[in-house]
Length: 396
Image (cartoon, rainbow, N blue to C red; front, side, top):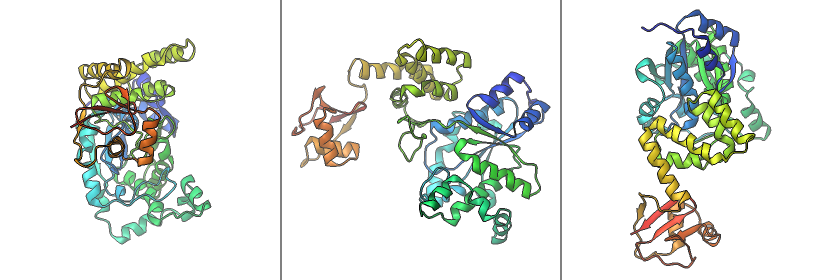
């Protein structure tokens, strides 16, 4: 077993870079400097099949604990995923079946391994204990926390004030996540800022089970492709860690310039000194952000693939978006014998309405063989159709 590192510089970076808050900071600093091997937990519910770059902010922090020699725990919430975390939700989540959850998490470990060393991690599933529970176990857990305390979260207050339902399952969810910390005897738990209520609940539940309270490290949330909302599968504004290199590069290039510095800070290992130079170049010296966004995209793609694939993705993007060439690989669509009109194609590809498809064509957002499309165009086969900035299809 490797010795735990107490390197002051690494501890400082661990507790500051991409970190919103540490609870209780002085206690965690003392524990990290003591040389004691801490049990550090990060939990993720498989409510969708993809791990996206938003999840990797906390996963990278888990890796930093690994690099210092601490025992890291990746908890897959296969039981809690059936309920759904109410954090940040203004309505009840759709309840998932165990079958759906099992399917979602099929590739979770493969995806997580792109960020953390699974050989150094303890992989756990909270169905290990919750599937064995009786009604008496739930009775004991729910007796630990009052209804008033459980309803303190802002999400619930907003919904109740607007006469929206809050289910008992949603109220119980933080208690279950809190009990995970009891079952795993965690010393530290990592989570996004939106998880603060749940993480604090872990401290309360541990205390009521006569255990030492875990320290908490909350990480920044990152906005998705729209630059406004938190990166999320449900909002379809995410970049998945298994996205193909070309798609990943293109998605990063489509993000607002305002996210460049933040993405460098939490999604790459570029030094703070170099990131500060980039920030100065953009904000003070007014250099073209495009140069740095390409650098960002290349670095991120290199993390999940390799430098050669990242370089090829950059060339492909430049050919398509700078030189206005067609991409090397284009999806083929086979025409229906009866339906050959352009509106039908856009509805099929974009999953949109006919009126929205017509509007897109009229506004010049569709090109056929690099020429502005006519709304009455009938497709014959062999055409290359460009829809918006990123979608190319070849008609068979």
